[in-house]
Length: 293
Image 1 (cartoon, rainbow, N blue to C red):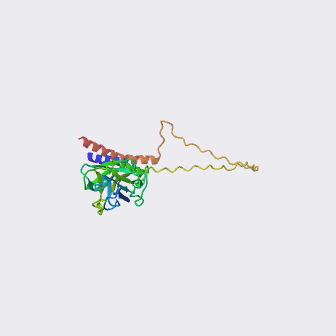
Image 2 (cartoon, rainbow, N blue to C red):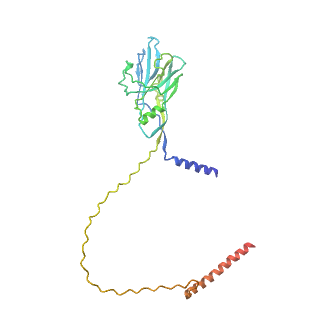
């Protein structure tokens, strides 16, 4: 019985909160619709930019001795929805190359302050790269291969609510000037694998919005009909007075304390009631006496 009442209470509480929240939506992983990785200098082989390989961090060239800076830019198609709350949002990046040692390289996620296109970035000039804002999450990349994650819930909430324009994000070194033990690359060895693409995993709760009540129509004042002067009626002809209506005589009831004389019908009805009621009362008395024994 206690289980039944517990179930009833849970159902009642759930129904109480049902109008407040439409539902927490489990959403599929979101893939970037724009992505590119870039190096500030020619690495000596291969290309200095790629839409499938994503380097980030900085290092010192072993041949040139020059500092080389790397960044990865990602843009996710997030829909603005003012009545939604982002419960969680995590950026996942598969790192399959890490250099030069196991000391760990702290990498940060940076929002962007301006829009960009893959074709519009000047790969030969860092000053033309999309500018970075203050970092929102940092993770130490300390091994490879494997998935690394950054919590970007607050950033995605700003995109969804419309508080911040969605220009995408960048992954770069936490210390933008560090060039030692501070480099990693995503998909450098697995660029052809669809299973290692960066993605955004998130969950959103859509809040219920109250339906505005329809205002009552404003009554339209009506114009009263125009007042007309009374029309004098012509004098009426003398009429013959009607015959007086006879006043009905009241039926006198018997005085208080006296009984009226019963009619023959009343007497017959009384005898019938008495003949039917006595057997019933007798049966009831007999049953009561048997129970008393």
